[in-house]
Amino acid sequence: MIGREIVKMNTPHDNVHVIGQNVAAHVAGAAGQEYKRKTGHKLYRITALDPSKVYADDAETLSGLSRGDAKFVDAIHTSALGMGTTTRVGNVDIFPNGPSAGVPGTNNVVEASMLATELFAESVRPGNERNFPAVEASSLENYMINNGYGKRAYMGIDLATDLEGDFILEVNAQRPYGKRSSPKMFNQVSHKKSWENAKRFE
Image 1 (cartoon, rainbow, N blue to C red):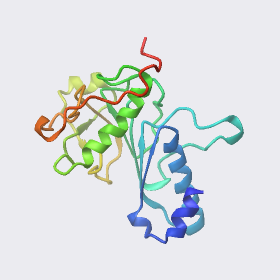
Image 2 (cartoon, rainbow, N blue to C red):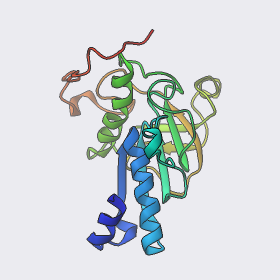
Image 3 (cartoon, helix red, strand yellow):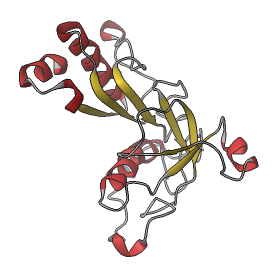
């Protein structure tokens, strides 16, 4: 349905960037697939914010987001071992402090999953577009061994769309999350934790 609505908008496909969080990341993939079927073109970009391992009920199973659903697909995995998935779904898959069940500063699997949205939102703020430098690595251990050196990708809105691979970076446990961010640019208000009663990490 979303794919059909994008077609109706008559917006040039190279101007369309679809963003989906958790299960909605796979809905974004389905929209990209439908758009291609109806127009013969691919959407410009799909960003998956902690894509889930559970797509839908058995009767309505989605095929799942994958590279190819848009010209460029990127994913930020903040609870790969929790609500999210370790499966590589994009041209670029980024694992902050991971892959792990959750990133430092989060207290339960819901917070960990929602953090991907906050990280991406922080990258959109003017001046913060390159505050999340990630490095190509297969694990956090591999990242540490190389002292954070290697092929670089800037997680978030400014991610280069000619990249491929898995990337790791470290983020702060509270706002600002970007290691390059200036605290003066942010209102240091803690999370609104409507999910405080969600399952906490073991």
